[in-house]
Image (cartoon, rainbow, N blue to C red; front, side, top):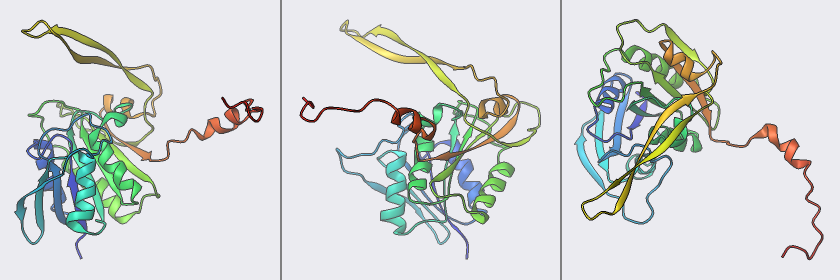
Length: 261
């Protein structure tokens, strides 16, 4: 029996990256797409609780179904699993994102939030991103890597609570050197706000920033991408800083009863 694969993204139902991922996944199994009806980049793990969610059926065939949703990527995963499939798929894939989701970007990414949601349900999941922010990005070189990684996940179960963050270098005239399984780079966005005024002289702001890494390690996703490797970072839903438990346990918490206020 063909594996059942649920696909979503955060760039929206019409994004070229999603279309590329659909074409690749249809060669591996039965595909059901549930994607936002508009771009949802930077939404992180947001869910919709203040308004109703609606699903629009676009295509229904024996081996392929496609739906759009007015919610976030996480909403799409929840609806795909619980309202459309009414079962766990064999694999959830998200992307292909237009732009890198390496390093700290994993916390902001709607692409990665979707696969983290899957990991919470112990469903194998992969987020795919291309290091090219252009809407017209060239995805012609990504299929062999996505196919190989997805096939491995289908055949080799991931640990519970773990998903994969995969970043692929942009097409640059040089062959990709290979695949590296690495850690998340320690990096951040050096941010500022561009202050402007509308025609009524009211202030408004656009967030802007420069991605900055001071991590000199050669075992990071940022290093791998910059050196033309596909990076794979295993990501876990447990955010506990285990190494800090002993340190904080030694703090003084001896509070006299009745002195809480």
